Length: 132
Image 1: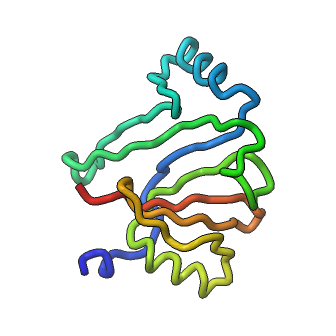
Image 2 (image 1 turned 135 degrees about the vertical axis):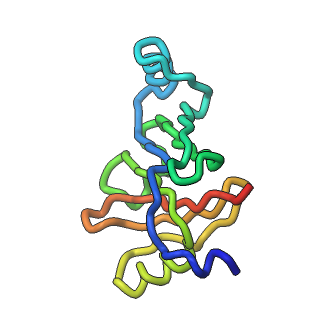
């Protein structure tokens, strides 16, 4: 299994998610004033891996309705998604270090996801993208 040989670690930012009293107004503001190319889900920014230019990474930016359960367990309505490699190994290490892991690893079309709490009680999303 190729993934088992990769060091469990964060490799970049996968997304920034935050609460908004009016997510549509917020998306529209960023589109009008900062040129974001928005959809109903927010905006996606793409970049290339400097060490492997054929590898394209994406970062998702999304305002959520204030009070959304998406931020439950967190102290505030801001969550950063970190792109990782070897999510299984990383979750194993986090548990050994006493980190609160909020759910089981979820496997989806977009990759694997899991949520943890950091030292300040902020919810963090870890994401291992699907290999294309």
